[in-house]
Length: 245
Image (cartoon, rainbow, N blue to C red; front, side, top):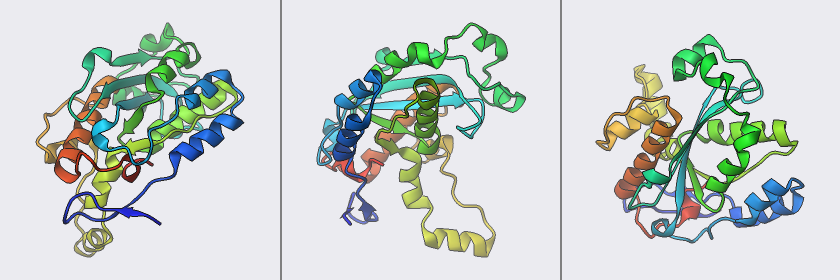
């Protein structure tokens, strides 16, 4: 079990999975040509320093929180590095979900039935989406939404799922604000834990407030958050294997 130290005084962090090996195995098992091509792009070597990584922040809006019962309604993504966010290369799609919109989700993200009535199914834009992600390090705020929804949506459309490494900015915050001792004292004192939601996490790094629940805006917000996290808590030569999951 390998542990890595970000900056002096910061907690040791367990290295993530051996993604290059996993991706090779997934490519061998893949039957759908589109997914084979995605895996063929490969992933960065685990020892690659963060300063050399090409990232892409990804955010989804969905009809609910359970990928087995809900579907994607919008996708936002933006490529970036530690030094720059490439807003001109950002993408935003609204897609027609195969599961019905409900009132709660409409209030949450503001995408209505009229917005999706003429929108394409995810299958029609899937090649574009995967082309924008392949070969890059995907960054999300809470991987159980983005990665699991992508996997489920593709599985329903192609009969085969998709798995890829991500850097989870929410998990990075949890390393510092969800320690066992903090949870213990939160229960004892009956005080809430420090919030690690996207907007609250950004506030700790003095990042500007953005109106949330738009996939593209949240993707940009996530990209900025990772840049700030790395600037405050890691070194530019820190290896990607310490952050990917």
